[in-house]
Length: 215
Image 1 (cartoon, rainbow, N blue to C red):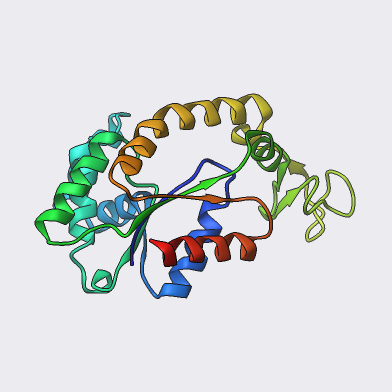
Image 2: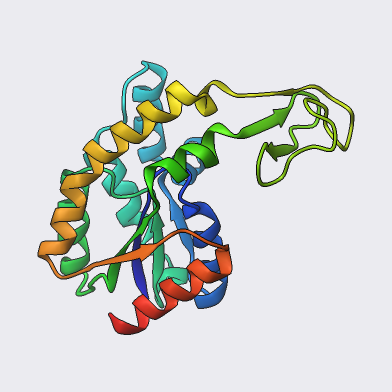
């Protein structure tokens, strides 16, 4: 099972990725993890990536794609893989397609987890974090017993800049603009499967399983 997982911030993509990894016994591959691993191990690609990051620049598509292609050659990907957070651009999507074709492999599908924008804003902007122990809370779904106070250590709860309403709205707008070409790309190639991301995680997982069975 070879899957590309697409979803906006707050859609529960990370949760579903972990559940799919366990269900199908395939590795979840994140470009963020790949970059950190390559830099830590000082691989040739990691050294190149670090030079861009140290200069405050984005790691080029070609380099990111090379790292992913290298990772897909490992033995644990023989039965499949789950790409989380890659591709992010149309150039990366085309490069991945070409790389898999050269290796006589194909994607089974690109799963797009869709959640109404208002729900995403509520999920993200309601998150609070303990300054002391980093415990996570949500003012609607998992509120603390006492407002502004951590249940575990009585530390102060605060809201990260990324979770503030204006930042959340901007992040979602950027996501929509950058992802639209990817959605079109996978739809034209007959690979796109759209899944409703509302409800409990197990309900969403069942919808994903059904979509995969139909692909």
